[in-house]
Image (cartoon, rainbow, N blue to C red; front, side, top):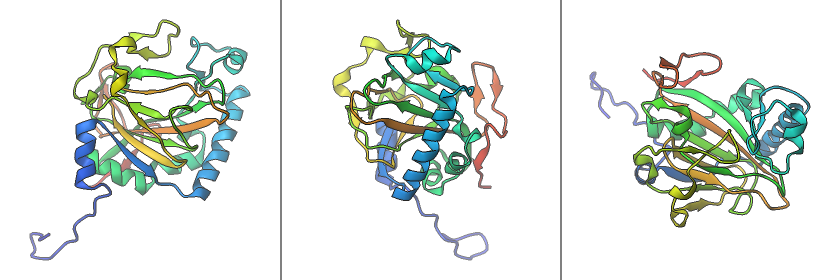
Length: 266
């Protein structure tokens, strides 16, 4: 690449191939596979388990998405079905804070939304063995109502996942338009597309521990209940461009500790 002074500057290497980038924009998701080393996975597992144990003991910010929203800790811990969520792990744990800035992740996100990247939020999503609840079919931006709707999520699993314990399932091409959502009949916490989704079109993405998928904020996705002997620990990071607006609050998202700029190139 020739610059204006006649010198040759290096061409920035893409983390994703052109084929991968095109596939993401055609399908609305991309299966990346394993990116973490085994020692990194073990560290993140220990910290994940520690944070959920603290949360179960009474810390704030702990929810069971399978039951009506409640502050009753016993109800959260003893419910027959559990889809457990901790928002903003990056504000609780330094290892998850570091993960936000991991170049292996940010390089891929940059290839999709450009070099200026801000955190929208992160969340840990835990399905215990035997009674891990589902996350119903939905588009993320039906919750978020962000504009422009071009956020990208990195979904990372700390356990091997398949259809039996809560692997990600996507409807290819569903990101091209927003769809109306309805509240699930049995919970106030989840939005459920119900019978509006053609389940036969679902792409089920099995991953090894340390594996990643990327998806667009309007891609329909779902994770099934965990009925296996193994727990399913997942962590999602949601990225946006600085200058993204909340239509829900009619404000632009400020840069803050809660929503830091993770990468900026000028």
